[in-house]
Image (cartoon, rainbow, N blue to C red; front, side, top):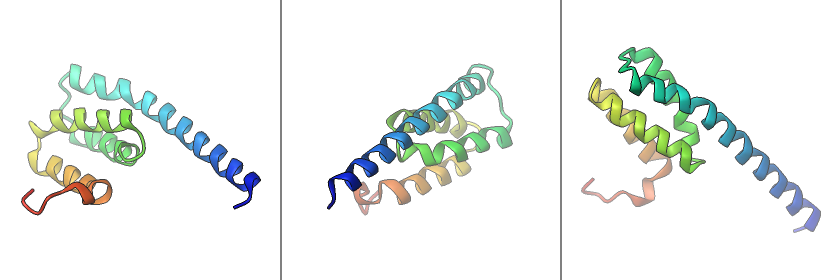
Length: 101
């Protein structure tokens, strides 16, 4: 492959990582507020889970936030939380799941 092409691709990847990290940093205070204030509004929580779902597969800090919010939401709505977890596993972790999971 052309060296210029590889540099261009590398630059795009770096930009995507920066955008993802910025987006996650903007979502983090919202997640913290939900947990700290014990908010139970399922629409608000699921909206954030939807947003975090994409970032969880691209960024470790996004995954950490996704897991934190899932742990919190599990106490409120275990079925929907399980759906989010299974969707994450299907999309991002399918090669790591044993048949017994």
